[in-house]
Image (cartoon, rainbow, N blue to C red; front, side, top):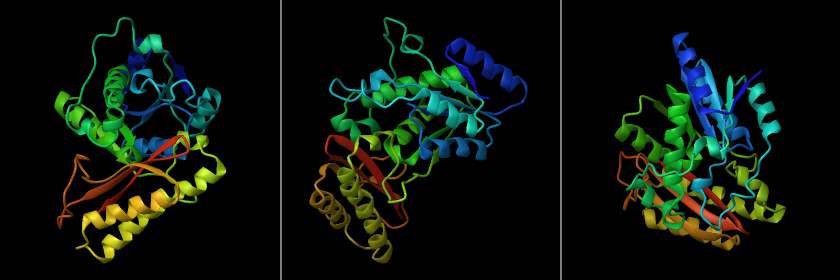
Length: 284
């Protein structure tokens, strides 16, 4: 049975004891309302050497803007606990806001380059909240390995840069996107979609898959053509496109052309109804 820990000192004590016993500790940070994508991150932690796995469940208030969905973000702790126990998670870290952010909070962690692109343009405080909470989770869980999902590719790139720049002694793993049977990238926010919105939102993944196939068949194709086709398909399905952008796969910073021998990511954000969805595919 997974041990539930609420306080940072107790989690630090647990992690130090695990290390003393010779165990490698893995951390999977989440905001809860778990799905198969989250569960795949637990598996990835085990596959990358974690003898003991901590999953954090914390809806982080400081990464939500004033008009975003913090209050209604889906929560179901007992369901999450059952899923964690079925995956043999060792510890569920479920702090309260007062545990994570004692008043007054005057120290934050910033990343000032990668975070300005893509989602950072429309969510200007989001990644400051992410880097701050993740650094606090690292200091609470003291992990050797931490796993993040490729669906949030910009977030993963920012965390990799933060770990490098601030010398966290942690191996960062980026696990592949897990999709629903129809291709929609799994997200806790998918529950907001009506049946019709869900069906129309499949234009995101289908347009990305088509671009991937087109690039494989015609490596010399112009990036602008791929991007325009993706945008057109999502718009035709009734989606409101926030961005479709070609980026360097490592940094998620803008790339102008598809240079041979390099790896690229096409990243998308679009709304169907009131639900904002993100997705991406790799090229090269």
